[in-house]
Every structure is written in C-alpha cells, then in structure tokens.
Length: 250
Length: 279
Image (cartoon, rainbow over all chains, first blue to last red; front, side, top):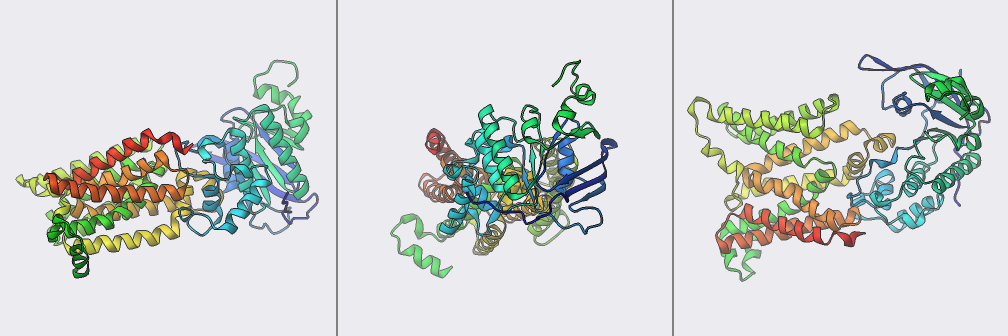
C-alpha cells in the first residue's frame, strides 16, 4: 500500500481552528458562535438533526459559504497557511447515465491533459496505485454512476487523498453504504489517519461507529450544543433533546 | 475554397457537381466536430433546453439589430445573446427556482421581445424565417470561414478547459473543493455556447442547430463507457448524420436540416436499443 504523510509532524497542534463562526443566509442564523479546534491526526464527527447546519459548516470550511468569524489552519499565534483540503462529498450526486469512468474522474481532477483524449500509461499507473490504497484498483474502468454506495465512497476517498491533504472532510460518508461497507470504510479511514497523522472531519447520522473510531464528537444544532468524547456526547441530555429521545441511552 | 472544390471533383458523385452542394458538405464537415463536441458538455451539464433558449435569444438580437439599422445584425445578436447568457447565469446563481423554470422565463421573454420587435409598425415576420428553419444549401464561403474559425476557437477552448468544465458539470461541490472556480467556469461555458449558437444561426438555422447540440451526445451516452468514447461517438454521429442527411435531402428534394435532424433521431433510437452493452 502506498501511504503518504501530510507533512505536518505537528503532534497535538491545531490543524483546524474555528473561532466565533457565524453563518447567516437570507436573514436566518444557520450557525452562531461556533468554536472548534481539530488537532492533527484527530477524527472528529459532526452530528446533529437534519437542517442543523452541519453541511453549511463544512461549506464554510471549504470556502463555499460566506461567514463571520475565523477559520484558520494553524494554532493561535501561528501564521495560518493555505491548507490542502481533501473533500469527499455526499455521494448520490452522480448521474447514472454519465459516460464518465473512474479513470476519467481522476483525470478531470488531476491532469492537465484533456480527459477526453484518454489516459497516458503513466497516468493510468498512478491512478491504479491511488485506488489500490482503498482496495479499489478493479474499479478504474467502471462508470462512476454505476458504483455502489461503498465503492463510490472508496473512489472519492482515494481522489481526496491524492495529493495527500492537510485535512480530510467527509460529508455523510456512511449514508447509502451497507453495514459491511461502513466497517470497511471506517477501518480504512482509521488506518490512514493514524499512518499519515491526518485530521479527519466528518458528518454522520450513524452513531454506532462513533465510540470505536471518533476522538471527538460535536453536536451541532445551529451552534455547538455539546462536544467531547463519544461517550460524553451520546449520553448527554443535549443529545437526547436534539434527537427527541425520552430517557435511556443512545 | 478552390482546393475544396478540386477535392470534391475527385469524387464521381452527381450531387458534388454543384458548388452549393460542395459548400454545404464542407459546412457539415466543420459543423459536425463543432457541435458534436459542444453537445457532450451541454447534455452532461443539463443545458439542452438552455441552448434552445439561446437560439431564440439570438433571433431576437437579429430582429433588434435590424430595427436599430445595424448593418450586420448578427453582431447585435451576439451581444444580445451574451447579455442574455450572463443575465441568466446571474439570476440562476441567486434564485432558488429550478433551472428549467428560469430558462422558460428567459426563453419566453426573448421570443416575445423578438416577435414584438420584428412586427413593430406592421413589419413582416417572413424575412426572419431563414433563422428559424435555416438553409444549409445557401451557405456562403464567408459563412463557412466563420464556422471554421469558430471550430478552431472551440477546439482550443476544449483542450484548455474540458476537464474543469466536466467536473463542474458532474459535481460542482467536488469541483469547488479542487480549487475550480465553479461559477466562473459555468458562466464562461454559457457565454461560449451563446457566441457559437448565435454565429451559426444565420447560416444553419435554429432547427438543425438544436438537433446538433443535443442529439449526437444524447445518442453517444446510450453506448459510451467513458469520456473518450463519448466525445468520439458524438462527433462521429454528428458527422454521419450530416453527410447522410445532406445526401438524402439532395436525392429526395427535402430540407437538409430536417433530414439531418431525422437521421440523428434514428441514431438515438438505434443506440437506445443497444444501451445495455455499455454495462
């Protein structure tokens, strides 16, 4: 397996620092006063009900949404550097009728040579190596619209890891993936973040995987309601209120 | 043109005895790759209806240009279409209405404005029919030159921008995360279609233009497995339909534009029945 380090070598220092972040769309406060620190090599899960502002938060970090406050990719006092963000979008957006193979998708993202001219042998070899990181080399000639949920997530993950980013952001990576696929995807992410000291920020509605894999869970509902270890958050009153649970534990 | 006429005379075909047929054939050979390429992105970006609306806006620009007494109303039409495209991009970026609804709004307005301008003061609409139906058999060497330049510009644009345009069309969020300026790319492509459609409309007409901008790629998508096959088949289908349609129209005495459009429709039907082969 080909693995890279993101080159941070930064121990517990901040990889992502969000301070007093607010997002207002059409007069509505979608997010208010969000403060969050993500350390290098940490896996952080964002949870919250539908419409709570999780995707808006990710879009603000990706620079796709205007915001007030600070989003920096360094510790306080350090000069913020321009980060390389690996992004795995929510998967169902590919049209099954698009004649675009996995190799085409990589070429469009990474190559200057027009993808419609076909791939050079060297480019194909590089793509195969990257796909091999996620055990997906056999997917190279498949059309992206025909991949299963798990296969598509693996392809998008491989795409986000080449070149190796400073932070990896995944929007609902577990939706549309079967239980076996979820386990395999989370194992893969866990291995990559440990080996490469890579910070991972992901949104999810699946809480069963969190105790085993997440370092920090953040409950968002137009602002941060509670954050901490998976056990702390999943057993909190805030969690039960946000998901309309009466008594008992998650 | 004399070199092209000389090449045509090497083929012992009756229809190539006529200069207007030689001109029309050359126009087809230029139009096929031009529209075959553009149609791949138009269909992938779900802009088929938009290219149709642009054709109507070009017609409106021509009518307004004629009223204003501009000597070459086609350039007035280019300006009108570009403004139309930019305005549409601006509204689409700021509205939560579906794109097809907004296209309907813009298209209806453009057509109404065109007919209003053309018929104002009791003017006749008949002289604008050539823009709607078109007549490739009356294409002039000057118009062929313009088509050749347009093709060259589109090829350069394609080589430089095809990857980012494709990514923007299939997944704007993924494109943005890879540093592609999504809105700028979408606007640039929209303006490029506006210019090409408008420059072509006076020589080939709206009917054939819209067929060539949608059907080659729609047929290619039925059987293509990747982008290379998609582009190659789209251009080949446009070329085959163009040549076959022109030949058929000559021997049957029918409209060339309509014949080409019908053959493209047959190609779509044939590939539709073969679509399972792409897997």
